[in-house]
Length: 569
Image (cartoon, rainbow, N blue to C red; front, side, top):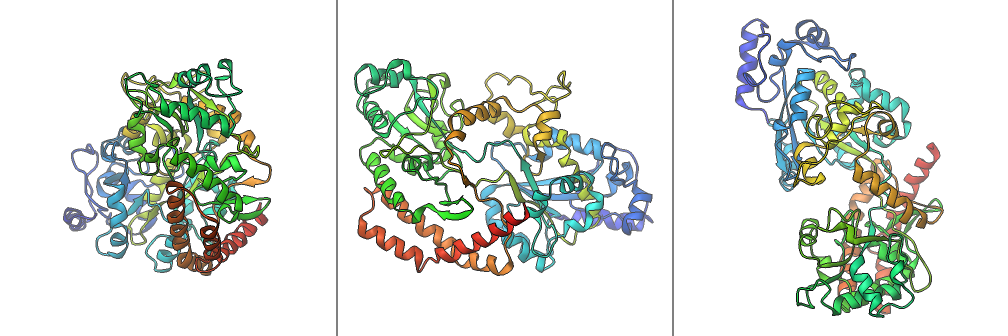
């Protein structure tokens, strides 16, 4: 936020007849807020403060500009992360650009509480919001009120970003608003991971014990290896054995957790269980099938699947805490003494202390022979990651600064951590950044969260091929998804991409979509944890979907938007 000292500094500089001190260390004088330079227009910025944007390897400002101009950026951050002001990557960026940015970090929960207040208080705003999480409707609303900056009017000062837009019209179309302008900067991380957020891991030692005990028909000890394909009947027998026996050898038969997940989490969720019935479910229950927007909750197979899963919950085969626990609780409970017989997640190493004791299974084969995976709508292009307020002085400088984030070398460090801490000082023989060995006692997640702000980046195939080596665990995930997930996505099934809506469509979605989602969630949790759904309850549910929840109106809007999207490809 702007602080009084910023105003005082600006007034003093005006009184000093546009004189600015040169040189000096950032720590000696770090103005808070946008201590607006006493210049008018880009020509004055160039002449007095050495402003340049074309050479993306050179400073953006001279030393005088570094002292005279500063910006405040408001951002939520992960609780494990350092204050962004203390992160090496941010200090390195200052050294490379001479652009002085003060970060105002808050928790994600605080941001959600303060977001509307920030936008509503014109007298006390930051210059920009990072990790803004702006939806298309919010962007248009504040753009129409001239609250946020039309960034596309300033692309001249953003050579990296402009190059991306020229090469990737698909990205440009997804971030362009109805009026033809771009108001928010995106995050682009294309690895092929987000489409499949679940893999099924099975405790190898426990599974072998169940097979040796004769509890699971049709499975041998030699079968217990990566790629194991179990029928729902075999999995049920396996989980029942885990439930009834002291699998971890601690003298208790009631602390084993046969099958675990984090209900409605972005990864490691329940959706793949619906694949046993041929449904490509996801958290929105919305997927494209042969070009048509489809809602799985309108399919009678969804009722059969819900009742099947509810039966596993009733029998104690699915740990009931799966519907209540947070991601953090799930990960914490997996460490130490073995508790999990099977679980859904991207990788085993993050979840359990002995990852080598867990194999990766193929999707479960359902009672009718169906075997498919969920297809999530998690986008690899996040469209509302950074906004800049319209009243910011010297915005050309700030945009030139954020443009550096789209350089692949910088993107890698923004996303994973800086050279010298996460990456080796010297590239490998192919000229690519390579990650250092993990410090003892520190996980990859911990190191990343402590040192990387994440946010706006551009890491595409070109970056992975030419600039930066993919993180080892990410490559492992890709290899596993190639073997145990991607082959089980039916032809014609695709995620719903980022879509652009008209203002009228957004108003309709605003009126209906939240209530629709709440209605589905309330009923699902009731069915899955309460013994299932009766035929009469299912009929009422379908009538409500078609009537008072306006699902068909919502579906039509998505279909129209998807048809427009498909026509541009």
